[in-house]
Image (cartoon, rainbow, N blue to C red; front, side, top):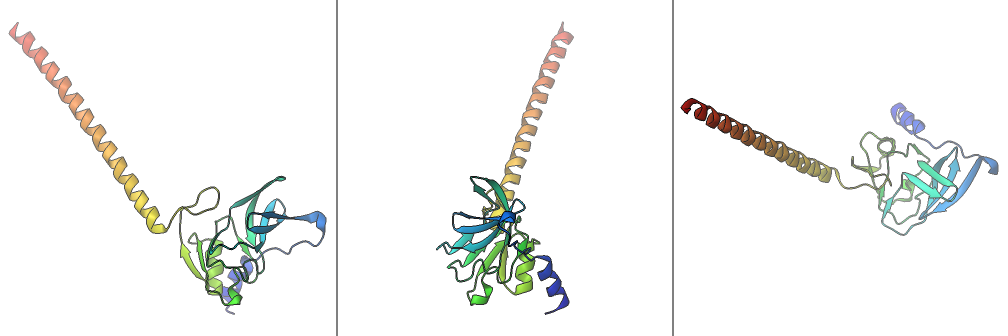
Length: 189
């Protein structure tokens, strides 16, 4: 393993899970099992049947909300998930986090430059990038959709500015015509 690959992998590993029950708590929420450490959640298992797994940016429990910050060792091993969407809140990854050693070809969807992208690069996992994310951690669309939406917003804003300019010009012309009419009446009298 090259020095750079080793440094990237070491930078994004899950902290050791405490063995003392007082230091951590295990919870189930939707298709995930989490361990709660220092008020953050680490996914230890995905047990859903979906081919697309969307990792949430936070999990809600009766005890409170926890930000999802890690994916533990083998969390997606032998799962049916072919595509896994990772929010930017996830910044640590255990060994074989996406089950890459089980021979399944998975695609990871994450933000460019994120820890998930670095993990994928260091481990030879196919990765696709997106920049749009809502509060639940689900991604709103592909990068192409995001660019298209931005173009539409820019066109709408341009049209609004243009309409405001036309209204302003009409108001100025009307004021000028009234002033000219008033000056002509004063001149004739």
